[in-house]
Amino acid sequence: MTENWNHTALLVIDMQKDFIEDGSPMLVKGGKNIVPNVINAVEVARKRGILIVWVVREHDPLGRDVELFRRHLYTSGKVGPTSKGSEGAELVDGLVIREGDYKLVKTRFSAFFSTHLHSVLQRAGINSLVVTGVQTPNCIRQTVFDAVALDYQPVTVLIDATAAATPDIHLANVFDMKNIGVATPTLQEWSESKA
Image (tube, rainbow, N blue to C red; front, side, top):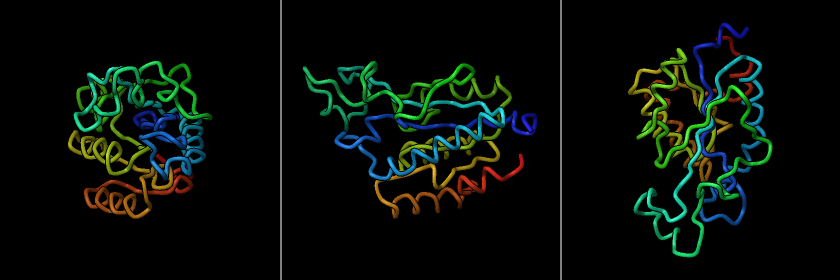
């Protein structure tokens, strides 16, 4: 079974406390609901021998590397969201980076923008991606569109292991991704599929 999946990577995007837990200024309202499915997707990937890439935001505590529109969240004396080393930058409970997984730190929406993700995947012989996490109109969508532009095939978004602030926003973005050839199965459909 493993050899059928050895050219696939699972991207787990931004499943961090500052995006998922109540009370955060970065809360994605649909995020908490998908945690069990993301955990299950990781378990399926591990059984299949799929490379797991943990894509996380980690910012300078002073916000020097954050987008302009978020700089107000990094005021003096206050640790901003997903600051490196903060509790909010940690993965949510139930998600654990293990030996053999790869952790990629990003500071923008796309996991490919100003990172070395593409070269890491190329060196590992990866040409197919499965995407989980938050948030569909931002980090998921930007990463998926970049993956398609870089000729990863197929690119798959697990529609019940990704989320946005509302179901309508999520589904509108899933619709757009389907229109560029992205596969959008449920976790169960993907779990039962063959490579």
